[in-house]
Image (cartoon, rainbow, N blue to C red):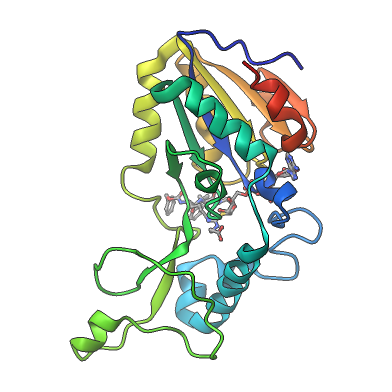
Length: 246
Ligand code: BV8
């Protein structure tokens, strides 16, 4: 695959999914051996599942927090951070991942569509989300200190977006504003995503509607592959450095 035709007028919008972190050792969701293998998504990635058994959800996310101690950004994350350094405000990275590896690789213009694993927030009060790397082992779901001070019991939750929940306020708007400003100079690159989860999976169509061109890098053809202008099958860590080369 030729490098992306990036000119000094190009605006690049990138969407990443779990596949971009696979070479860092983080399991994806839907591949064999994935995070959801043997689990019922409704039990660990919905509000109803959390309300029914917060401890089960905290075990799921605590295990993912613990696993972060052994992972680091890979060549795909680094290639995207290097491109942002080249393009500046003509670059925007929307990620479905909650692992924070893009930021760890130096990316700054990042929109976390589904939240962040290393933040928690209260399930009841409106205190702002806060950094929380703790893996809750003691068998008790963590409670909100502010609610407790007010004499109420409220369980903390991971600051992530579950199915049936709205994306963080402003997240999609930031992506849409960037795309509209770029118009026909917009290049869209999706990396390592199965194209099954909305609204992220339909970004490719929005780009096409405004006259942008679309690329996909994925280990195998995802559900929405036919909606891309160009498709490169392979590992993100192997393909991105060439694809995004100056
Ligand atoms: C919303 C939590 C408005 C965080 C996740 C009915 C009722 C309610 C909602 C819906 C409904 N019908 C549809 C919806 C919308 C729903 C949805 O999309 N459902 C689908 C499944 C049918 N979406 C939502 O609810 C979203 N909110 O729409 O709000 C609304 C509200 C109410 C009612 C209507 C509308 C919220 C979506 C967020 C859900 N949260 N997880 C967490 O725990 O991480 S989703 C989960 O899937 C993750 O966030 C993940 O990021 C996301 C997408 O998965 P991928 O990243 O693509 O990972 P996957 O494993 O699937 O694929 C990896 C790919 O990489 C593979 O293709 C593989 O081949 C490739 N790969 C592997 N290795 C490599 C590689 N590629 C390159 N290199 C490699 N080395």
